Amino acid sequence: MPPSDPGASTCTADIFPKEAIAQLNRYADARAGQAEQGGVVLADAKHVRAADVRRSEVVWLEQGPESQPIYGLIAEVVQQMNARVFDLELKSFTEPFQIATYTAAAKGFYGWHVDIGAGRLSNRKLSLVVPLTDPAEYEGGAFEVFHDSEPTRIEMPLGRIVAFPSYLLHRVTPVTRGVRRTMAVWVSGPPFR
Image (cartoon, rainbow, N blue to C red; front, side, top):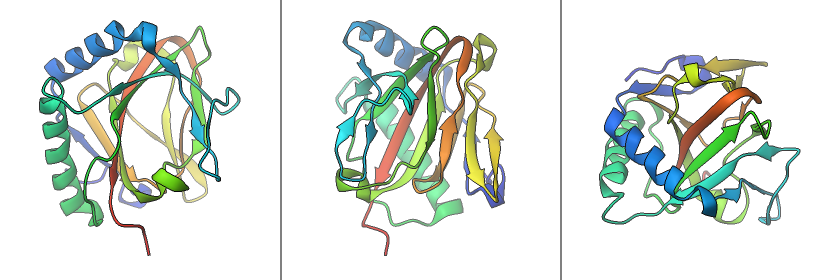
């Protein structure tokens, strides 16, 4: 699992099973009526809905017997990626996994942001994104990280897991056709010093 671009501080692995992708899509579809608007956390740790920054619907995959295989798989991948690339001091998943759906109908996107911040976000160390829809099913919706003064697009085929330090600036460009769905994971550890 070498980094896709060592300078971009990302690491990819094309190992997420199709059965797990199908399970997560069924889970999100079954809870679509309970989905909430994706929010952002401000510098003062307040969670708000900000349609000018993010437009997506989210559901949460809590830890439990049904989700244990997914959590176990992600834990193994985190351990391998961290050992080979990042060498961060990590402890656990302190937040449920987030499944986000971006639609062309809503002009779904997520502007430039970092995953670390105030309050409960201060311990996020490593972020992962797992695509749950085939890129052929949508247009737009590119995942980009900002490195060395310009955006770098990270390809998101099904089966890929993308990992990066939570302080890395990243975004999802507007979806212009179809539906884009991903799972976001944050791994916590002691605060950066």
